[in-house]
Length: 381
Image 1 (cartoon, helix red, strand yellow):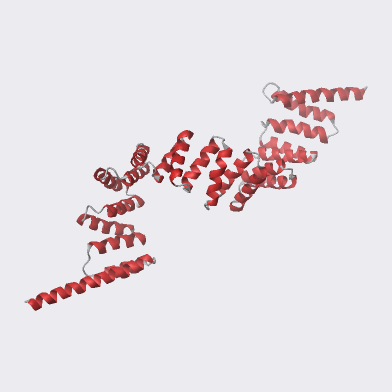
Image 2 (tube, rainbow, N blue to C red):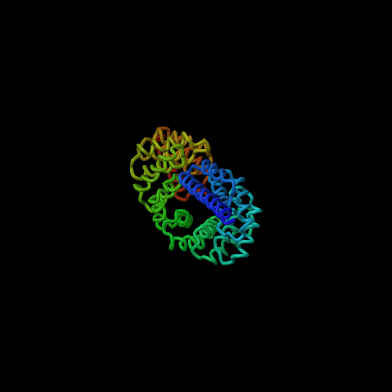
């Protein structure tokens, strides 16, 4: 009898050792990304313990076999419903696979069982958001009530406030999170965009710069930072950042257009012309603003012939562009010898904008019409 017991114990010990060995090999395969091989190793075991099922669930999830992973998680939880971390992994996988109703039910139970757990409340908030539940933001607020520094919840709240133009609260939630984690790119982005929306460009620059230092060098960030420098009058830095934006997306007509204006402001009229022409070539929508800017660049070069050509093109794109209508007359005045035609251009502007136009341009047009008529009269005498 004692001999039989000894043999049974020996066999059990051998099986336990074999399972432990298989689990170790599986863990090693999992660690190096060999998920399919890890699964095969675990499946070789005749007797599968809870630990084996859990490792199978994780391996299937990592191998993008979500349905199999969910089944193994369910097996583990049916035997041990109090495994909190397993329940959390199961819930997240339900969310990832779009099973939001099931995930919602699971996290509802978890938040009831563990009411002080901020992460469970946050997961519930994310599910509510996916379900387009109007209470989602309420759940994010409950999350920060449990953990006032919860980065994910603070980001969601800050983003929501920015979207709804509640800039004071967007700034508050962003800065609250950044006090704990100054390098959170999501919160830095919201804070920078909030300051840009408020036209507080000097305050917007540091968070944009921080994002670039963190490697968040997207076209969007470079363009936003470039525009901030543009607004504070640092045209050289603005140009540098817009050029960086072009390196990432060289078919953006808006970037070329802004660079064209910036180069004109720095006196580099050749580059101004190049980028404004690129903006026109790329843009498929009405390009009267680009034609106007290009005309103004030629005007600064005292190339009145080309300036006139592009002011006319601007008006062909948009006959209601007041500045283009006025500048057409000025360019004609500087280029054409036919004073009567020039008067007609000024008169066309004056007739259309006498009561609604820019006071300075209306006054100058009226004065120039008078001067040219007097010139023609004197020449006739």
